[in-house]
Length: 130
Figure (cartoon, rainbow, N blue to C red):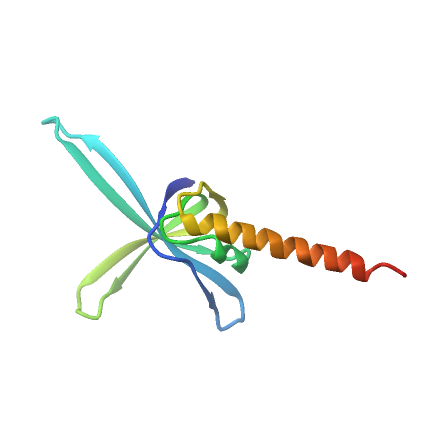
């Protein structure tokens, strides 16, 4: 399944008790339609997302960024601190495509690419036999 939406907050990296890292973030998807009376109805759906493949992607996932995600959806239900029953949608993300939309994203991408290039260049220089 694919969803496209904007991040509602910056991504966070958490470490599980098994020492695995997961990136958690939230995405809002806006949709609109016209009802039988011709009124335009706006609807927003929120997904709590998790990404287990690489924690480094958290640097690029900043509030407001437009993303296209591939993965699978699951539901969860719980009782809140106030005793009310609650439900939510989880999106287990397997692929992330950035579409921009956040000023910080361009800066972070440039920084990540620069750091990556420095590491690559240092690695090749250190491998030279002379």
